[in-house]
Amino acid sequence: MELRINRRALVGLGLAAAVAASSLAVLRTDSGTASSHREAPMIAGDPRNDNTDVYAFVSPDKADTVTLLANWIPFEEPNGGPNFYTFDTKSRYNIKIDNNGDAKPDVTYQWTFRDEDKRGNNTFLYNNGPVTSLDDANLLYRQRYTLKRITPGGSKTLISDGIVAPSNVGKASMPDYGTLRAQSIRNLPGGGKTFAGQSDEAFFLDLRVFDLLYGGNLSEVGQDTTRGYNVNTLGVQVPSSDVALKGDPKRNPVIGICSTTDKHNGSKYVQVSRLCNPLVNEVVSPAGLKDAFNALPPEKDADVAPLVKRVTDPEVARLLEAIYGIKAPATPRNDLVEIFLTGIAKQNGPIKADLNSQVLNKDAGKLRPSEMLRLNLSIPPAKDPNRLGVLAGDLQGFPNGRRLLDDVVDIELQAVAGAALTGKLVPGLTDKVDKNDKPSLQSFPYIPLPSNVAVNQR
Image 1 (cartoon, helix red, strand yellow):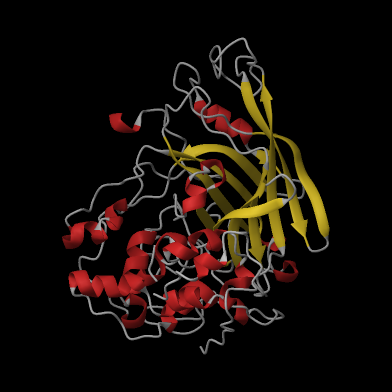
Image 2: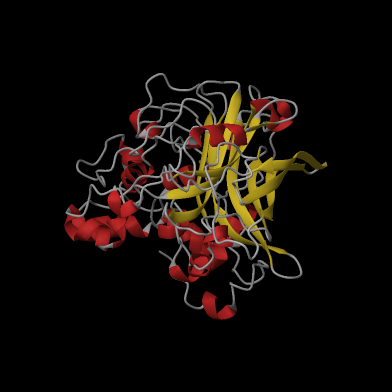
């Protein structure tokens, strides 16, 4: 596939103030692989608005529906009272879907929150007795939410009085947390479900990748850095027709997914966080572009020459060659362009069919290259799913959407090293963290229940 990209300068893109002229001067043109935990300087200081991960998959128990999950607030220590973990009442939390390939949202699910706090000057406690239901009087603090479905034709309120599943304080306070989770799941008008609340941190990896790629000799692997931590999750499970172009997932099956946070700055809402594919801002964006990337809408991605350059000539590939002697594939890396910017639209190594390029959609508009998580709704759930997804021949796995079981670190390391070109995996190139310590649940929202045990005690 030939990629035609307008490489205009960053100045004039109309980005947030983070893209000051002084920042542009230090941009380097080098890329890499692999989620957004503290990935940019500004958002690292604002965890309630920090997207961490997005998951999108055909629901394994309801194949005519799609499940979209997005997480916020990285590294929640379970015992982090007395205030625990809340969504920002001055922000809008979004899951956005592009179904015609122009990189602009055609359907947006948007949550906003409000507090109900009964503590006042009387107590510091989150609850003053066992909490057995979401409306239990012992729960002294809760959040409620409004969920809207927004399209170019207008906005519709789906839920106006949803209750967020509370933080998991512990067994004495919440003897049956699973019941609270179940009560927090709401049915949507016209079919579907939604959830807002705390969950286990399902993203598994060894974050010592930042210590010279696992210690410079692959000695620092096998430690699940996020084990035991929690996150805050928002999710919907909706009929595939609700998100497909012209409502027909068979005719137009491919969608692009991103999640964003808009924070009110006193006069207007400003996008401060963005997450589409996992780990892009951490290791693809250079340091000088990270804050700007969080403010960038996907339809502007192809205009940012330094960002495109870091996909076509990835920094991580050169680091793998310098540190481990794994020869970097020749540039420009059009295989990575397909994975990250356009979707896969040809036989490419182990990929034996057109997979998830939005340009293939009948009646779709002209494709706009953009960094989005793309999902083909017509591919059914795998009977025997493989953690390496598409690279292992499991076409329902990442980078065709993202399931909770997908080992995105190993997949992206292998892809950057050339596995999508050769069809062969590089032996030993792994962080040796192959699965989450908690299994996924069998029904929506699938993501495991949050832990209530201190991380250092696990």
